[in-house]
Length: 132
Image 1 (cartoon, rainbow, N blue to C red):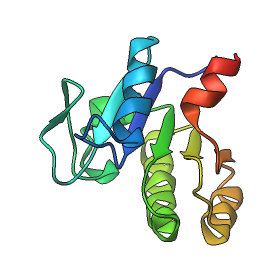
Image 2: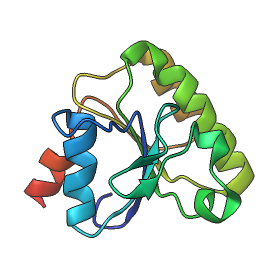
Image 3: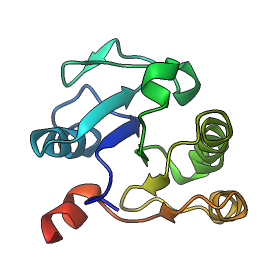
């Protein structure tokens, strides 16, 4: 998945350089991935404009998102999954949903499976990328 896709929307991206929600997207950006931060309290993260939600992405960006990477509590995953499903219906993208290490939700898995959207849960993008 990470070899095939290179545009990642990061839901819950952080402005705090000490948090994984900052360091993981920073690592991915350093390795050539385009990062689109999604955080309702930030204007900019990692030098990129931040958006309040996935639904606030302008069409020219929404049509480029390959993976939605999530740094939000597990109980919020169904809400994010629903946004991903809506994006997919509207734009034909994203191609995959990724919930970071420690995050998992059965309802979100079911929603994504029913919508035929591949997903990864409880895995760190950076760790997986380093294994490539």
